[in-house]
Every structure is written in structure tokens, then in C-alpha cells.
Length: 405
Image (tube, rainbow, N blue to C red; front, side, top):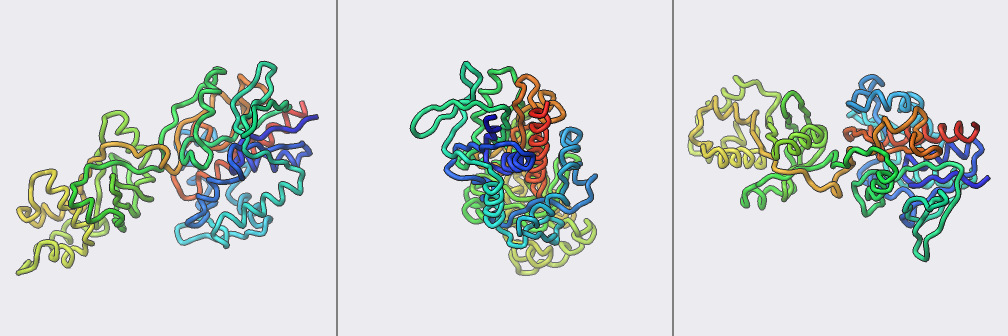
């Protein structure tokens, strides 16, 4: 029998290939890039956050509306199972202070190298520079290579082509039109864990681009997040922003803008902050006074001044109570969503109603899908990789059942 085709050499595809090979199937992994795991390596550049250590119910809740659809896969290949798998590859893990789980080597490259060696020793073959372009009239998979177009027969196929973020690393969303032409329902791909655009003044932009707002609390409506946000030339990004990116994005797509509320000193009660700001200013400049009395960094003071500029009410004209209120409720108007090519991940994808319980696309018997191609999103913190590994694991198991039938 010819090999099962796995299309996409990221975490979901490689995990499906491992499950298939261990189940006795011949496997060839195809990828448009010259090597495997390009985006996986990028994700590990600042420390590979494999998964998270929080209790499973809280972990699953991170997947929001998709939680009921992903729960079985994540329970089948859980965070604990992922850590055991990493250790079996010679890459033991540790839990960081935030609860995030990393390999002790921190980088992605040692884990990926060990994984690829294991796959190769298990008989998995690789065909790089093979861009999938659909099926021919005989139902064979078609690939464009640097030299030609080739057709491949496969008893089953796992599609693990990623979303549409960081397209230069391979996931460009080019599969959407192919599957839609076959009647597969696909939610539009949108940026997730992304930055947002803001009309900063030239003065603020030039002075504070690249500087972090540390220890802030951000909110939109009932949703809030604590952490850090980075001022960019075009707007704002960073971990706390990513945690709210779904709510911010949907508000902007619906209304054309969104107001983010920033608390610069979230641990200070209004009365305490007002008391500090009621102290005599003396001959200090307002910026110096705010720095000393309220403990604000220059970038935080700059953000207050931006808000005052927009509202046309100078900071110097505010009472201590008004200033205290503003410090922990700075309104920042977001005007747009950063491009999907710059997002950490993407939302949208193949609707779960198109899949059976084994991750097979109902309209395309023998064709399975996994990873970021599916319609789910999650915050950073290990949740993205966990779901990619887990759905690849379940899709691989599903193919083995399909072949056995």
C-alpha cells in the first residue's frame, strides 16, 4: 500500500506522522518549505513554551467556544503527556514562575532535531519543496515542486497546513480556496495574538517606540488581563494585549474601533493614589512629580499626556482625584488590527461541524485535518502548541482507524 500523506511539517503534521508510523503505516510528510518546523523554530526563539501547568479544566477553558470540540483531543494527549513525550526525546521540561512549561534547553532546535531523528528511524519519509495545490481528476494529490507538478496516490491524507500568520515560514492560508471549492465550510482567517494600530502623536511615537508598559492591567468591557504591553510605531502589542486580542479584534471589526482601558498602577487603591497625588508639587515639573509621587515610568506619563491631548484637557488642570482616576483608567483608542502576517497565530479555519470525531473531513472521506487549520484560537502561554500537538495526535489515530476499516 502507498504511504499515508501528511501535508505540513509543523507540530500537528509531525505528531500525526509519529502516531501513524508507530501504528505501522507508511508515511511521507510533504511541505512547501525547504525544511521542517520553520514556525516551530520561530516560536522557540525566545524560549519554547510547550504547554501550561494549570489544572486541566482551567486549561481547556482557554479555548473559549472551541473548548467542547478540542477537549477530547487534549485529554487524549494532555499537557502531562506532552511533557513525557518531550522527555522521551531527551528534552526534559520545567515549569516557569508563570506556570508555563518549557524544555530545559529552552530552545526549539534540540527538540526538533531529536524528533526528526526519531521519525526518520521509524520510517517516516520527507518530501520538501512540495507545495500542495489540490487534487487531480483521478483524486490524486497534486504538488508543485521547483521542477514540475507531480501527482501522488495516498490511502489517506492528513492536512496540517497551519493558519495564515507568518506566511514566510510556510503557513500562508493557500489551502482555503482549495477546500472551499470542495464545499468545506471555513470561517474567515483573522489575526490572533496580534497587535493593534493607534494614532499616536509624532512626539509620543518618536520618544516611546519600543518601550514597555510594565505591570499594567488592561480591560475591554468585562474582559481584563495583567502583564506587559509594548509601544510600537504603529500602535501596541505584547502579552497582555494578546490575551485580549479576540475581544479587541471583534470590537474593531464590528465598530471600526475599540477603546482599551489601561490601569498604570492597578495595585493602588483610588484613595491611596489620590493621596499621593495631593502632595505639594513644589517646583517639580509635572512629569517629575508623577514619576516620584505615583511611581510612573516616563512611557506611562507619556501615555497620560496622550490621553490629555485627545481629550483636550491638560493634566495640569486636573484635580488629584481626577488624575488618580485617569492613571488607572487611561482610555486608548485602537483604530485597527495589525496584519495577519505579523500575528502570532490566526483565528478561523475549517468549521468543526465539517469534521467527524476522528478529525476526518466528512465531505472528503480519507482526508483529515489538524492544527491551526481548524476553527479555534487560544492565548499564548503554551495553549497554541498543545492544541496543535493534540489534534495531530487525534488525526493520526483517526487515520489508523480509517485504514483498518
